[in-house]
Length: 423
View 1 (cartoon, one colour):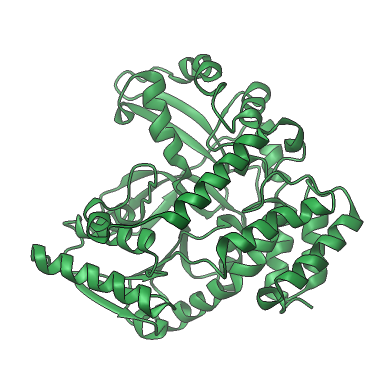
View 2: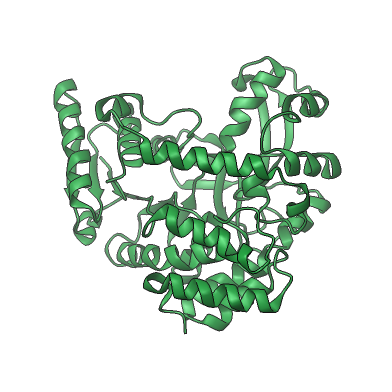
């Protein structure tokens, strides 16, 4: 019997979806599911929905719900973190647009670029508080982070708590699960793929047919211009494909956060349409709680949290397409301490990354990120405004010291509630 703690469980999308996945699992029957959130009303709604679902179907699970994180973490085996800080969209738009006001050519603002720095500075401190409790109360638990910016959060946790068992998961790999079968007119299970890089900044490296071992990438490359070339938010995507020869995992919004020439190549209308639609959908989304639990997470969400926990519990040695973990030589061109996104296999001893051969060109783009990641983590752990400014100044997207200074000072003014610790 395992104890699984969901931090941020008051979110109907995360909490109910994760519960739905757990309740489908035979391997996890008998587990204790501890729900944690700072919003007691949302938390109680999720807990009541889960309890009703269990009772109606006579399932063998026990639900706990509490705003006391320390109580929830007692005897935990797995801690899943999915949180956000403050008014998500208001702050996100500040991260995105304030740098633009000072001339910084940032095409998006969630995970990379100045916006990604500010998002990291805001969200990492409360996540470190969660991990500090894990370190004291259940130090052997596996921590699974779902929050963004994934790479910076993971690196900060690892630097602060180097012995903590930690992985990060993102659903972005679902694009391959969805698109490759359509392109090749086959089931995804018929394909063997390898993809990797950094979270939201990765590429498809290999593709073949499982039955014959025949390479499938040649077919994929031939089909990319017709299949992707006419779709929204793919201008930068296509430039990367054309010049570097590999299919990116994500679209222009995320890709553009990391590339200094993205302003010229990106499909800006597609990015704005995506964000506007996403925000509208999320803010107007009405969840049918019982339906959400019954369905669990959907293919496009591709939250592989529960299959990984099942794999550890059953020692099934299955392979995962994308896990964020400490590099330690998995991608030779990147430093060991950086968290990379790579395939992995799962057994009773945990999650084990697979080595990838990263092409030099795209590897160079990845290497441009290292200084930003390091200095952002340094700023959080030391509370240093100077380090935060350095994080901006080493970012290839920032080409003006004056703009960096003014942007940082303005953000610190608008977001003083969250960034007041920087001195």
